[in-house]
Image (cartoon, rainbow over all chains, first blue to last red):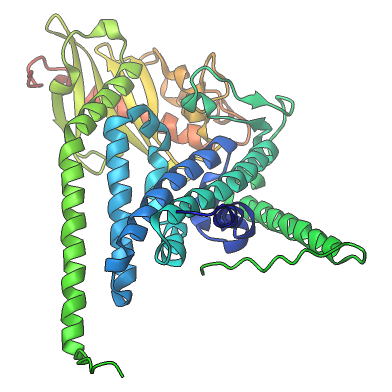
Amino acid sequence: MISREEFAQIRNNGVWSQNTSLVQILGLCPLLAVTTNLVNGVMLSLATILVMAVSNVAVASLRNLIPHEIRIPVFILIVAALVTVVDLVLNAQLHQLYLVLGIFIPLIVTNCIVLARVEAFANRNPPLQSLFDGVFMGVGMLWTLALLGGLRELIGAGTLFSGIDMVLPGVQPLQLLPADYPGFLLAILPPGAFILLGCLIAWKNWIEARMAARARRPGHRQTATPAVADGR
Amino acid sequence: MTPQVRKPTAARMALRTAVILLLFVVVFTSLLAGAYLWTRPAVEAAAAEEKMKSISEVLPGELFDNDLLKSSLRIAPDPALGLEDESLAYQARRGGQVTGLVFEAVAPDGYSGRIRLLIGVGVDGSLLGVRVTQHKETPGLGDYIDPRKDRNRERPWIRQFDGLSLASVPEREWRVRKDGGRFDSLAGATVSPRAVIRAVHKALRYVEDNRQRLFAANSGEDG
């Protein structure tokens, strides 16, 4: 099964130290296109979590059957087939959810995060670990995209949660800045997303530099934490 | 020393990997085919329901008592509608009398690409409703042409078209107010509404030019 330390390491890797958007910088195309508001960012992430969990488990279960030389085409085959099946089943069985998530699922097929995790992690680890890796990589993406989408929406349009009524009928978006706020187009267009993403990466690096400096300060007993090994 | 293992030749290796790859392809393709066949009825039903829902937004319920999806007529591609492929129009009938028509049109000159519209026209030539079904206009700027994105919930922009006709609005007024017409638009975002207004105007003229055929009582085949 899975030990507590192993679980904690997978969780920290996914949520912070190997964050897909801030450290691995993967899957930027959907990230830039979709995070024009908070709700979109969250929805794309939820769809990605679902797909990554499913494909990681599938590849981890089959990993001993896949010859090393042809692993990439087989991974692509597995991921593409599973994403399509998820898309069809959601459409048929959970149509309300599909109306909300549906437009994001085709975006995920082209998202290299899924293939990257399959190749880097699920290919060498058992199914349970791979399941958690997929989920927590997705959770890392979730908070980053929510933050990025929320910032872009607030700066660009002065609102938060616009589009929420498509997910939770009856809930109204928040108008945080005055109603006559003229909007700031740059934040909504892709260049604004690049700039804000750059700021977020700088913010994460700043926090880590500060933490490292504090750990080095004399008198502070350094707890020897080995550098987190990543599967890449 | 381990007993000598015969090293596989390159051809044998290639054959083995090819067979394994083929097996994976067969298994996952059948998985796909199975999922497709299993979900198809539900997916089609949902798509039909979806279509009815958007049609009912441009066609008041009291205007028809027929099964719209079965009372369709083919419309050849026509530049007046901006369509490049053949499309379907749906005839609304009540007690056998044709009362209106629902059809698709495309505004080719949106700010970022084509804007697909669903238009309902009454038998008297007046607009029953217009809805944007697909667009790529800038979120938060030009996308108010879609009432689901319009911040004015009480009176979304697109409802300005309701009840208008070629007879009631003269040619030169089919423009945004900024260009001397009668339609409102938001400051700084006039490209998207201009495109929609032009497309609706052209579509109305198309209906006027083809009245005979479009409103003929027997042109749609009833199911």
